Image 1 (cartoon, rainbow, N blue to C red):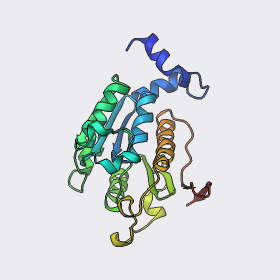
Image 2: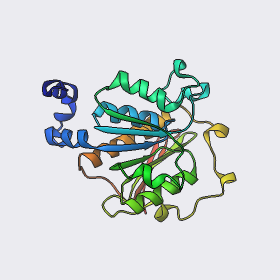
Image 3: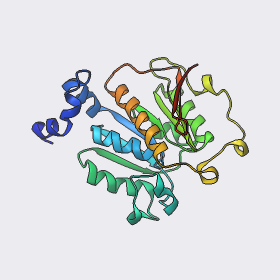
Image 4: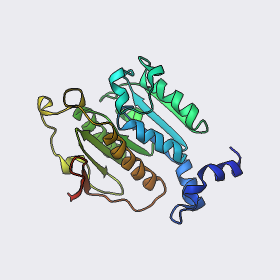
Length: 236
């Protein structure tokens, strides 16, 4: 893209004193991997693409279903039964075709996690199960990569940044995963669509701050209760 078009597209970010031209260049040089193309992954992808993240990858193994559409806003009725990463690729082509986007149709497990995560600077945890969440944390510790974490349930969400510049990680907050039968999920308990939009947008903001080398709150868990409209920060 020509320099004048780059400036025009991202001018409202460049005008921010803390970003400027140098910060936008850092954003455009960032290499980010999002795990999960669902409720959280959708707004994260949207806003990172809009901001001009240079290289953006999305890993997911699922297909688009009708019940996804109340919250997974990068997908549409036309994409029903397509893989979520191919649907995301369609969205990216229309939204910001200048980005180097890599759709990864894969389920991350202990056998491939290191290989998949290694090329990326920032990892974004938008998955929906504790097994993958703890695996991502373990792999980011092994590879010394920052992990932006978010989760949602009903009207409530939470987010944190782990393993950034020596900060604490998931195990410092939750040393062990709860038994799978005790873990609530959207399929059984539901989620109101705007909640993942709120949490995902906040996660995208943390990714952009890391990419632009702006101050990031670490060793803190942010709790969002949209039913009672309460925002709480807990140190750990």
